[in-house]
Amino acid sequence: MTWNKYYIFLNVLALVILGGSIALNLLLYDRVKRSYLEFNQMRLDPIGLSRYPVNLKQFATPGQTRVVFLGDSRAAAWTSPDLGGYEFVNRGINGQTSAQTLLRFTDHVRSLQPDVVVIQIGVNDLKTIALFPERRESIIANCQANIRQIVEDAKNLGAVVIVTTIFPVGEVPLARRLFWSDQISQAVEAVNAYIDTLAGRQVIVFNTAAVLGDRQGRVLQQYQADELHLNNQGYAALNQELEQLLKPVKGKKVEN
Image (cartoon, rainbow, N blue to C red; front, side):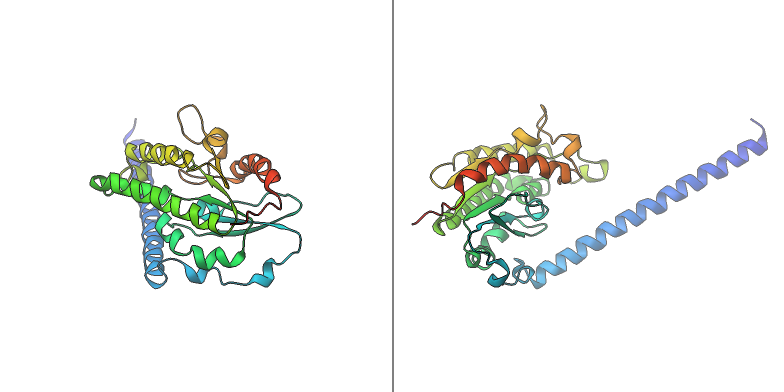
């Protein structure tokens, strides 16, 4: 290699490194900014009550079976299936834990008088285990207790409850591995095993891993938007099963 070519190579390499550094810093800035905004939004409205003002007139179609999706961002992103005779209302909020969802149940669900409540919650509790490994057992226990209470509150409304197992996670990118732990997947398995025990009168357990997961327990790549979230194809796959679970409960609100 001649000196001129070597000089050009060094300059190109320096530009590539500089460009990569700028891109990484922009990415980090964007993540820090989003985290800062979310943190301060949570300080203003810790459980997200202002997210969904009550408006029963908006959901007053006679003869419709009302289905409410409740939970975190995975519930918030759940696109309703195209199913005649059903009215779908979404009450998911991004980033919420099971404790936050439980605290807003009365304001966001009770007033809607649902016939069916679909619950997807828990991953935001369990991913904190990477940050607080010494609190692993209490985090799991609190998550289980909150899910149980949300189920009980929905049952007390006379609703049929479809409680989903926590969705499997996908491949964790390098940038997030510093804040991740194998214990998170183990905790998901533990909470899902507990969710299985909730099945009974009024309560249907929807095993989402059977639809979404591969043999290693991760979400199938064709359904993955990122390590925690599904794409439209993933929700379409879930809806195929959800439709089968909904059909037998149409118009069958339970009298307590």
